[in-house]
Amino acid sequence: MVDGSAPDMNPQEDITRIRVLYAKGESLRFTGHLDMQRLWERLLRRSSLPVRYSQGYHPRARLNLASALPLGFVSDAELLDFWMNEPLPINEIYARLSDAAPPGLTIKEVLQVPLSEDALQVQMAASEFEVEFFDPQDVEVLNKKVNDFLAQDTIMRSRRKKVYDLRPLVMEINVIGRENGEPALQMKLKAEEGATGRPDEVLDQMGFSNTEYLVYRTKLLFS
Image (cartoon, rainbow, N blue to C red; front, side, top):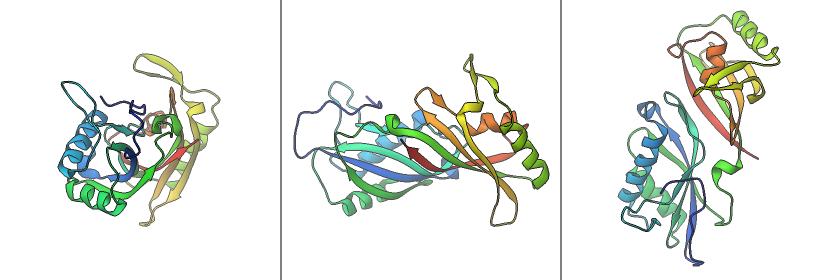
């Protein structure tokens, strides 16, 4: 099974927990969270690494993605943990993962982490994003939208038929300049269990439709 908990394992010295920092590019933009899990299972099979699998009739790779990335977003900062039955040199693991990765998924860094460490989802505190607009934006108008949003004490919205307050989930929003000189947005949103802010919901509240921008996740922040 694929879940957020450390797998039940016998105490064996050879078992290792590997963390991967990877980028999800535009060709995988419309690949959802569950499909990304399946993509990683296929990638790990192709890598021929000694991946640790669950028991039973349908063995599944033991893996743990840090935080679901909403459909339509791209990222330079995704994290995943998986477990292996025996240790290998980090540079060999990196090379095998890179060779097995499909177009749009780039392996950026690989390291070993303690088996006893909490699941990635439990450690999550916030995510940082940048928002690129497809059409040029007026800086003054964009700043006003940001200030009007931040000035509100509560912003009640509905997600999956549940009413929630969006405002406390937004830690920062700033107007920044991109390399091409066009204004963009930078956001820092909470990403705790049961309290996760989504950039698309912030942008919808500010009056932007989801066809007007592209969201990049740039950093995952742990507690």
